[in-house]
Length: 409
Image: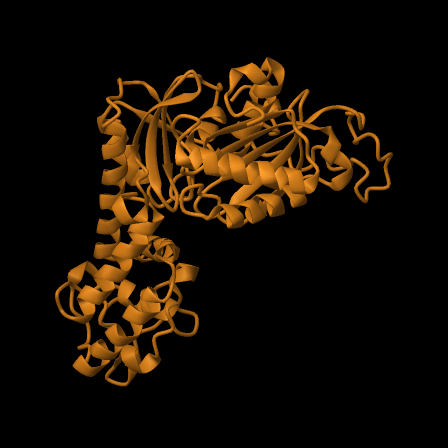
């Protein structure tokens, strides 16, 4: 990533967020409240970039002149199609309140928001809902930005890519999953992203649902042994008696923890969740039935999207050698690659990827790289779309209101 782009996105020369930039703007620092440590005066213009996804909404305040990050705020989910407008408004207002101190609000001249569920033209429901919620949130806070831009979260992520390309492919794998072809920084074609009920195959919800499914299949003997039965059961508060095997708990006890990455009891020593599909100690029928009786109502009592919280358990189990958990991750990566393949990529074409399942520590990074490599493609990871949204807000401010239809709607 070039130094110029790093500055635009509020990052240091290595591409990392410069969290110290702009902090000395008089907000408890004892400095002149009209000027930050390095510069802009209080009357200089500010912009806000928003990344609103299925799990959280992030707002970033930045300088309009050079893109330096001056504040950040995080709140609840921001999917414009699945979060009701009143709740979405609250989440946006909360994130904006944390990112933009009240004295700075009159200086905000442009706001760009990348929203999950907001792809397509300006009259698409997701974009309409996002604009309504954002407009109301800004009104509540007294932010009278002249330029307001709504785009999809994936368009915002693409704008944060190394070299700031205008054209290429983008893939988001977080709670949901969607791929997109970007032309002139706007969506040309979308694949996937159909929500938890109809699609999002390969995303965090899909992985979490598969974790519960294989656990239930183990419990009723339709499927093989997997450590996910224990991990899912523990997460849902299944009583120890339902996990008992000949008087011992099918659990990670003492210093043995899947979360600590130490040797676990997946094998025959203390678990019916043998590795490689092997059978450990018998799981009594009464315990298996009690397990199912607890898991099913516990899952049904929560919003479906909450299944995404089991995705990290699949990653932990796979790292410990659980064959069924690894199979889930491999299949998830295959679904993501299918979305990219449907965009008819050209070998060597840029693919920008983002979302909690990808990146340096993402559980799908390695299997997805293998799949994309077979297509002659290489993934370029960005942390999220908030910095891209800042870049789009600055672009909207520089180019004026006629370049995007959301202005003053």
